[in-house]
Every structure is written in C-alpha cells, then in structure tokens.
Length: 312
Image 1 (cartoon, rainbow, N blue to C red):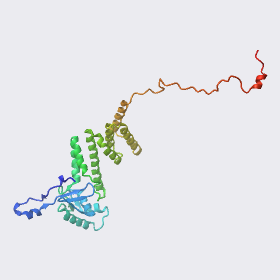
Image 2 (image 1 turned 180 degrees about the vertical axis):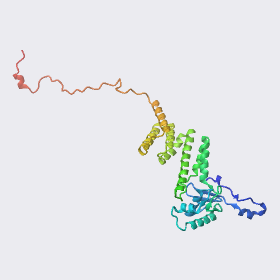
Image 3 (image 1 turned 60 degrees about the vertical axis):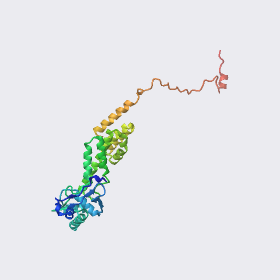
Image 4 (image 1 turned 90 degrees about the vertical axis):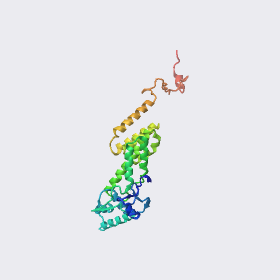
C-alpha cells in the first residue's frame, strides 16, 4: 500500500488556541482511507478497521456517489436489490450508525439520505484514475513509473460486495482504466526499447481480452523488435481468424497496416528464389526401360524351327 497519499488529520473548523487541547482534539476528523480496488478495506488513522459484509456494502454504496446525497431508498436497493425487505430503511440507518462508530464523522446526514463529502475519505480508485491520467501525458520514463504506481493499487475486482447496474458500470469503468494502464505502460516500454520486457504481460492481456485490438498490435511490435517476426505474424493470423469466426469482421486499418509492413520486411529479408517452373539445371528425368533384353536365339520353338525351310 502506498502510504504517501494517506491524508493527515484535518480540522472541521477553525480552532481557537484558547479552547485547549481537549476541545481541539474533539473537533479533529479522523483520517479515513478506503480501498475499493479489490476486497473493500478501511483504514482509520493508519489502522485497519474490520467491517461486516453489510457495512462494507453500505460504505461502497455511498462511495459510488461520493459528494452526492444518496437516499435511504436507493441505498436499500443497492444493498438488497430491487425487492428489499420491509426492514431495509431502519437497517440502513443502523448500518450508518455502526459505520460512524468505526470511521468517525465521514458520513453526513442530509435529507433524504446520507452522503460522504468529497475529500472526506481517501479512495484508492481516485488515486488510480489520477495516476493513469498523469501517465498519459508524461514522457516514457515518467509514464512507466506512474503506470507502475497505479497498477500496484489494483488488488482485484472493485466493489465485490455490491451488485446492480450502477456498481457493474463502475466496475467496468475501472477495469477499462486498468487495461489502458497496461497498454500505456507497454507502449512506453516499447518507446524506451524494452520490447522483451513487455512480451509476457501482453501475452496475458490478449488471453484475457481476446477481441481487443490494441494489445495484439503492441504484442506484434514487441515480438518483431525482439527478432521474432514469424511469431508476430502468427499473432495477427490468430487474431484475424478469431474476429472473422466470432464477429464476422476484419481487423482495423491500423492493425492491417502493421501486418502489411511486417510482411514487406519478411519479403525483403528472404533471398531471391527461382522463378516458377522447372529449374534450368535440373537433371533430366530418367526414361523407364521395362522391355526384356534381346535374346540370342529363339527359345521354346524347336518344332517350328525344324519345320521351317532353310534359308537359300
């Protein structure tokens, strides 16, 4: 875990020094960090806090709309689905009370529900997105470092305690960022000439994302620059075959253009061959000789020979 972005304690309002240390401590907000990129974890003032499954689900449901009020009804739907039990509303309020005991005053009551104000909680998903965005506009060396820091935050599927379309959409968004980070890191590594270092990671990515085009192009480039041109061409053939078989479409123009460039390099590297047809210095094909050898005299015709007239 990257401790560099754990927030320091921040006061909820100005503190008059004359109020004394005890009162000052009473108005200090706890530093809360929530890890969403994998099984949800909460860290308060540097110490891990154990939460039940329902508590984790409620915290995740609030963080899906951080900075916005989420109604009790919406929270119940996110926790229990489209048909929550009659006791859902009081149970949500009880869970909020439990979370406040664990996390401090990060959750604010605001009709018709609750919210977590922006900045009240540090979330690894926010840092992840910021690092990926930072890497996208950086020079290759800095980009690799930023992508590495981002990918270190990823521990598994986000929001595992929540179902429903909103959570699913957020999972998809974060996973897309993760894939972009892997692709961007590979691109930066290729620009730095580290083609061999990215082959294994890209091979895993194309297995995970068999219909995504960009990883195939990066893998083809990495293999080609590593002196493995036949493998690069095979990667294209297998991807094209899959697209045609499963979707009935051809690869995009960029990937086709890369394939043509690699084919042209293959043709230039091959020695000129003989023109089609029989080579000029080929030996003549042997003529079969299947007749028996000539005999010196007739055989097996003694009676006919005796009856034949003698030659004049």
